[in-house]
Length: 318
Length: 310
Image 1 (tube, each protein chain N blue to C red):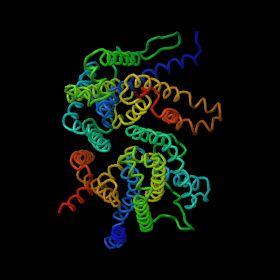
Image 2: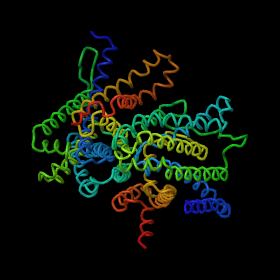
Image 3: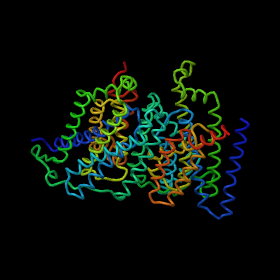
Image 4: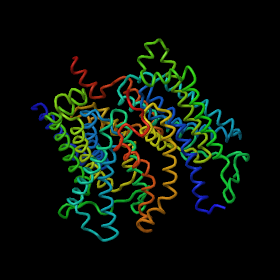
């Protein structure tokens, strides 16, 4: 616990160092990229909760990012076009994100968590596609093209915009969700969740019902990702069905795996690695997805524990 | 003489049958690979896409549609063998997460390769004149000859798979492998060869499906993934590894999706008025098959056509 607190202190120190550096370099693109990274990392933290600790591979987790994003987008649409400015209230939007994320998580969880293994993956993928198609078919809200968020969320008169403000809010949100997941995973609840991953029958024999624990974990992960979507819409100023496309869920899985499953800081490390890879390779070649794919195949073939796994293995051995 | 509503319904039903056959051709291989090798192959949709692109490309170069279909089958099968032998065979005993990662990597690569080879805007395929016409079916109802041919191809493939799986020695091994692959291995069967064969067969069927679909929907980058997701729904309903279940589930999904798209708007405007219909129908008609899947899972978590254990 003390060791973890030290790690958190270091993390906060690093996060605080980014804005001064960006200010010094006069590089707002860097700051914006860092914000995007932190927001995606908090969604990866959510994915890690169900996948790393719960052993559940969801190919539909981007749905919750979409929920958070579309709450902001739809509110902005009506605030801007129909003069319903009260919809821009950020507190109200957050309550909507919370309620919708919980409802959708319960629906998806009830349908998918009673099945096993490979079915969970296919069902989350299919339900994710269902929400994606719903967004594509919502012509009032831009359909396939999405919509620009003209009216950002407002908290007590302050709009959630500006590179520095978004950065600080994202950094605080990431730290908070990491802390929450770290505390959850070492709690009694987290131990049952992890034990159900390792051996479901024994967990049941000890008197715990894996289904219920998983449903709670899935719901918490949904809410965290919903919050990430809320931030993402305000940061990008744009929402579209691409936010909840199934490849976004695939990216989240890749980030978590690159960072190392079931580790507290892994999702952030994996997100940084993934975005850095994307930035560097897309600068070199138009066909940057080919080396990214090749790296994924190589990682799957040779390093089952991911980038963080490599680091910790080296630490353990030397 | 039947009225226009009946004729429209008949026409849409034939379209549904054609879509169902296309789905079955994709799903048959996928469900076998799931069932026998326990491999989650997200890249199966890429085989479908390559089938469509290769067929469109060969037909464009040579002008021969039939040759194009044959070349598409052969090349997608070769691609399947290549993927299986070089990479995927190392993943049969691995965690599903590793399989997701590696096949997700393949999707990224194959989509980019297709874009590099054939361009971002995709290829369309013009049918030969012999196929590109309508045949009179009933008074007042002409139906596309090509879609008829598609349905017939689907039936031929279904019969072929039935004979292969139920009547031949290879089929016996496939069925045995689907229920207990370790026992099959223990009995001295060269399971590696069987796996390669099944994987190549699945790839060839997906390629055939893509090649036949190319004149109808034209080849585009990423066309495989939406179809792959529908194939997953078919597998969830039909049961993993169950080809017969996949057949009926594919037809069911074909009908519900096609008829939903044609009648959803009318049904909603009848129930709730035109303005509601205009807002909801485009979303709801696409969501229909997934909602059906969710409902089925609530009642029967093991799927609609799944065999009972034991």
